[in-house]
Amino acid sequence: MSATYGGPMLKEFRDFISKGNVIDLAIGIIIGAAFTAIVTSFVKDILTPIFGIAGKANFDNLFLVLKPGEKDAGPYTTVELAQKAGAVTLNYGVFLNAVINFLLVALVLFLIVKAVNKMRKEKAAEPVAPPEPTKEEVLLTEIRDLLKSK
Image (cartoon, rainbow, N blue to C red):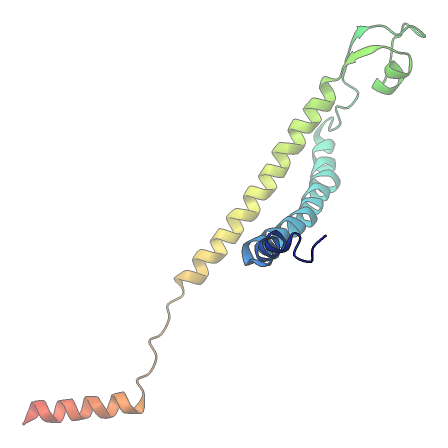
């Protein structure tokens, strides 16, 4: 093998990786993963129990038996018992939980983005006082005014 094997491609790859956009993207993905854990915990551990007070919040054990199990014909009180018995089930409750969790996560993210946008607008709306003129500018203005008056 020669010493230059892969040299240009390796250099091109190194240049690609060292560009700011790739590094920014990698950091964004890592922060996004951590943020996902926070939002998921907020929905699962805070919002879902609050909704559970008002009614049934966990639909995991809502299912239809499509074919009874060979070991036990049922009735089954949980999906796990049905699956252990070999029954074929349509687990629509798990799907409902996924849809509800998605909607709650989307709501939380919407509220966060709305708050961030509001902060950005408030920051942009703050009036910026014009800078005071420098001594040179003041002197030049005075000279201009004197020349005009003559």
